[in-house]
Length: 294
Image 1 (tube, one colour):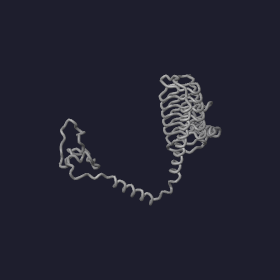
Image 2 (cartoon, one colour):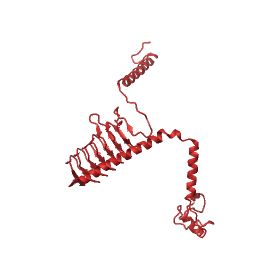
Image 3 (cartoon, rainbow, N blue to C red):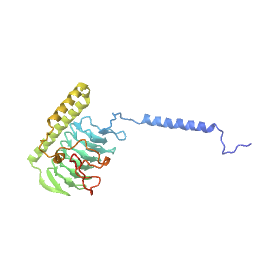
Image 4 (cartoon, helix red, strand yellow):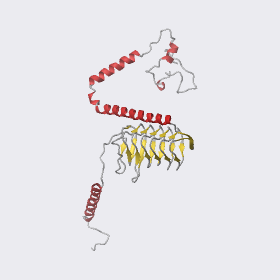
């Protein structure tokens, strides 16, 4: 019987699958050999993450909070302090996000895109910056918004809640406020001196937090079982000292409002309730029980 063109011998498909499998595995091996990978420790709550092989340079940073997030092409200067729940991310490969020396990024700050922050700059709580240029010794107040393309020159102050519009330039030594922000005054010498002290104090706070976290992680092996028992005993003694003793002349009906019952019964288990208000059926009258717990 003549063999048609569509029919193939039984062993040829297996050879084809074998060749395809070897080829795919060689492709994966070649990709891993060609790609340079940066090894960094993996943690559940990791505050520094690599993006497409770009690992942030944070070796000289003074403090990065455990709950902060630094990702991508980011460079942190000497003694830079990034406090809690702040996000600094830059997914661009050409231009890095650079934060200068002795700068402070406070809590819940968002830095997205290609941003340059100079030396000795303070970014207040909840501020948001998007692809802007911040020069040296600048104070950005809490909740301020710096839009795309804005330039803040040296020794300027952005008031709390101010919104700098797109492509706006704030000249050196000016104080801007409002939404949209406008110039309201010039920065005085006293204000500049106060900003310097604020930055210095927050950098010191960051160093103390860094030391406390390091001690908590590195020296936890020294805490033995005896230490745990002593601390538990001390906590129990402190709880006994702060316990409130109710006088006997207080009526039984009023004691439920002074000292809560920690062993409350579940209201859906029986007819009586353990709360002053019937939370299952508020329209029904309260049913009192023998302990006056209506």
